[in-house]
View 1 (cartoon, rainbow, N blue to C red):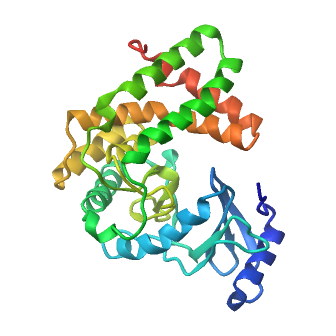
View 2 (cartoon, one colour):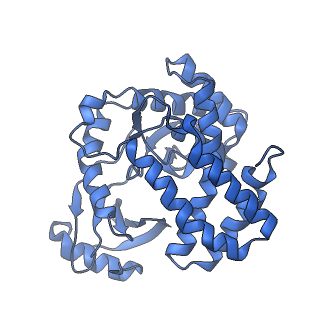
Length: 309
């Protein structure tokens, strides 16, 4: 597999070569290393994401088609893609860039009793607007479709379970195995009205002002899909059940539909979340991430729920 650069100096040289109109580029900060890309900031206030995995360039290309539509549809800022290359000598898996949205990523420690209601209300407004975008408006974007979800879940189980079997106690693994058997056979997980979703709507992708009083932007749209709106509420549980409950109340208040079946799927999708950390550790041979993700599984809802299989 092609290996993208990770150090700032090499990324800067690659950006200068790929986009000569930028002139000399200085990468001043690595913002994060995710499953599919490395995000960096330049001295000129630009943000670039360098793909780490095959297929991510296609997701970047999808963003260039989707984000202009969302800029006219959502009540907060979204990135404005200005630079994209599916493959260069420095970036064999692709790169995308846009002006940075001013603000900072939301963190759990920034949410308190004073700002929680307003931030939850703003998150709800974003999700209602997003989930209400007519599918006809994004028909030509090339978004993943609901039929692909089952295959993705089975692939996740297939890649993670053998490694977990080697690293977990037999009783722990048996509960995980039974959970997966029940999850993959659960017809309720496929019974929903498809909508345009962000796919990874958690605090790291929510940009707030310096006082954390306003949600000003939403970033990282590479996981956008025509899928289950319950996914976008499930990831909010990283901010706690209080925040998620407040957002759900506001979501309904602003006209969003979310019934008991949606809540059921939200809980199951929340349980699924830590398996992706395991997958990251496996694919990138990241022992530290693998150990941490197994710890989260042990402490998470799949193994701690009193009604776990």
